[in-house]
Image (tube, rainbow, N blue to C red; front, side, top):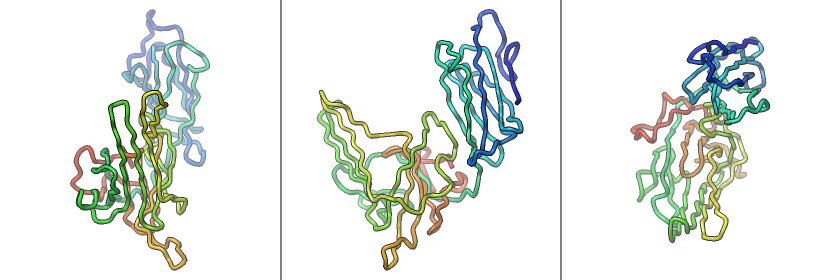
Length: 302
């Protein structure tokens, strides 16, 4: 295994031994594999430490292994991995303030997803509530706007109903219903840890599932004095979509558009494949079919 020991100096920046440094060091062992568990040799590793001001850099060996060790007063580490032909991946690791050998000797496996066939898609970030309260309002995923009279959208691919009753900042009821009015359309949840951009840049699988879509989900946020707070928002939630379905005489889906959502409602980015029956949801950020987006609406993640 390639082993980098930072005692007198680090491979990169400012890890210099001094009397004032703590007597303990962290020791990290990383294994990099692809999606089927095969070791990835020659992957570039960056370990960020000391409030991200210092880096240790190196390559995995033929067994996909990389180790590093360093003195320092780090509280957190960040392991960043990339290699040509793969999506970059990241893992964050908390050492804590007090030395604990069980924690200060992390052994982590990091998965690199291969770049397959990135495609143009309609992709846009949304950070806005439905424009009216208590009414079903459609959103057109291709136009990228609410349907008339609230916007320029034509096809209500998704219906949103916001029911919000607020008495004060701490006393309110909020219910969001996300539904799909067309038979065969729907949504399904896919949990992926993503705190502080952790994990692969390609957050979901390369393809959307063929089935398993539900016509509706409901989210509640409720706060009343003396009652337990309900806050149904999860940054680890992601979704697959199926819209504009065409059914055969037996009610089976014979044509549809597939897509995905990164994030939870109503702060999310959506992606829609415009080719009927193609379940590829691997987005090429350089070929967004959605034009004239505002800076805050742009999408960079694949």
